[in-house]
Length: 116
Figure 1 (cartoon, rainbow, N blue to C red):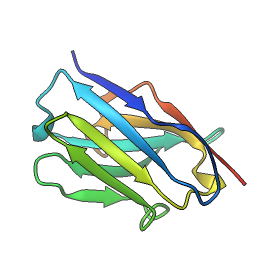
Figure 2: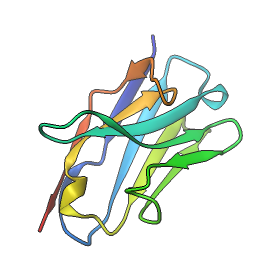
Figure 3: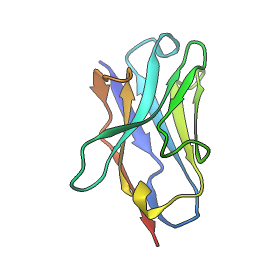
């Protein structure tokens, strides 16, 4: 059974940082693309960043380029999202997912709230 479990969300002031983690299980992690999506209140879910656990190729949405960094620890089957210079517009529920741009499995989500 594929499982994706996020952690690391919380409340932070604008300009601050958070690191999200997603522990994956139930599939061969280093053969897949994994990524982060987010959904703000009243908005559609959008892709934030994706990474190939096989070769490390990455994708970033324009809105987070230069501020967010995605990485994996294949020994731990974990994908991370380091978020720096956070803005109130980054407030959303962040979801870990397998496959980009069209995921087939999702985590339960973790709330990130950035106060101004």
